[in-house]
Length: 109
Image 1 (cartoon, rainbow, N blue to C red):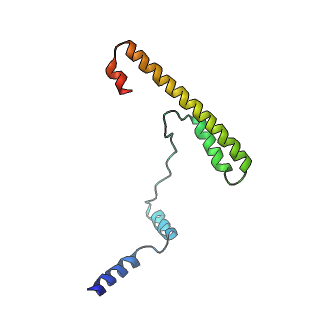
Image 2 (image 1 turned 120 degrees about the horizontal axis):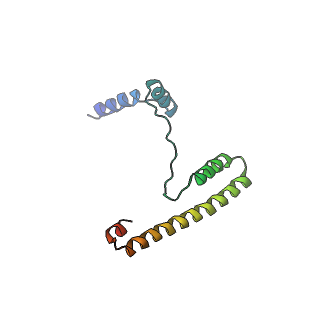
Image 3 (image 1 turned 45 degrees about the vertical axis):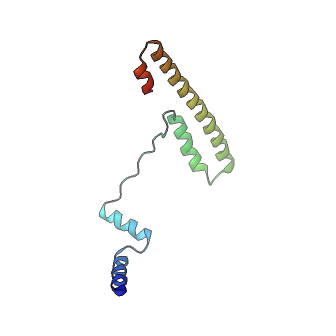
């Protein structure tokens, strides 16, 4: 019984690609490899400017540590400002809805 299990596992492992690189090459030749997705903002308050700074920071990560730190500080600053502005806009919108007695829309925000 154990021999049957061992033989079936050996046969299954023989059919799998040996390394990740070989698997990638097989996918590329089969046309299965999909193009990379465009990075989108994860949060509603993320602006295109912040995403652009993040790309620049990624490029500087291993090249220039000082420039990386400068970009990191700038991203944090802009991120906090954008989040604060977004929260303030949401609060103002909710207050307007409450004043106009639209409670159902107010609770949806």
